[in-house]
Amino acid sequence: MIGKNKISSITRLHQKKFRDASGLFLVEGIKSVGDLLRSPMGVVEILATEDWLSKYGNDLSPEISITLVTPSEMERLSAWKNPQPVMAVAQMPSTDAEILDFDQPLLMLDDLRDPGNMGTIIRTADWFGIRQIACSENTVEVFNPKVIQATMGSFTRVVVCYTDLEKLIDRHLQHRRILGTFLSGTPIQQVQFRPSDVIVIGNEANGISENLAAKVTDKILIDSPVKGADKAESLNASIAAAIMMYQLNFSV
Image (cartoon, rainbow, N blue to C red):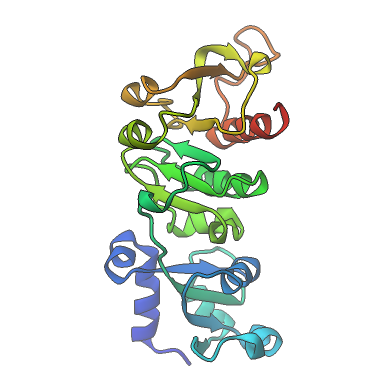
C-alpha cells in the first residue's frame, strides 16, 4: 500500500511549480509510458498495478524504481477521469532552443494556451515528420499533464523548446521562408510550399502576435469553401496547423 507522503509527492507534479522545482513530470497510460520507456528520456519511477507489472515488469531496467499500487490508489494519483494501470515519473528533457537543428523542419507556436491544442499539434507534427517545435515563452508548458496525454506518446519523439521567437528568426532563420496564417493572406491552394519553410501557428483567440507577424515572409489564408457569414468563425489552431503541415509535405 502506497503511503500518504508518496501520494503527495506524486500528485504535486500535476502542478507546474513543483515540476519546475523538481525537474520531473508525469506520464500516464499504457501507450505513452511504453513510448517513454523506449525513448532516451530518463525514467525515475514506475507506479503500476499488479496486472500491468505482471505483463511488462520484467522488461523494466533495474535502475528504475517500481511501486506497486492498487486501482483505487491510481485513481488518487492520476489526473485522468478514467486512470490507466501505469504511470511514470520522468526527468524533464532540455527545452533550450540551442538544441534545435536550424536546417531541419520547424514548427513555431506563438502563445498557444490550450493544452489539448498543444498536445494535438505535437502528435500531428510527429505524424508529418516534423520533430522539433519552437514555442514562445508564453505558450502552454509541454509537461502539463493534459498536453502529455493529448500527444499520445509523441512527446518522446518531438523536441519542444521555449524562446523569443522573433530573436530566433533574426539569429538563425534568415535563410528560410516564414509562413503564417492570416485572414488577409494568399489562399493556401495558390502557395507552393518548400521543405525548408517554417510554419507559425498563432494564439487561439488573437492569432499571430503583431511583432512576430512582422517577421512572417509569406501570409497564408486557409479559406472556407462556404461563403457568407453562416459558418464557424475560424479554425481550431490544431486543425490549422495540420492543414499547413499537410501542405508542407504534399504540395512540394
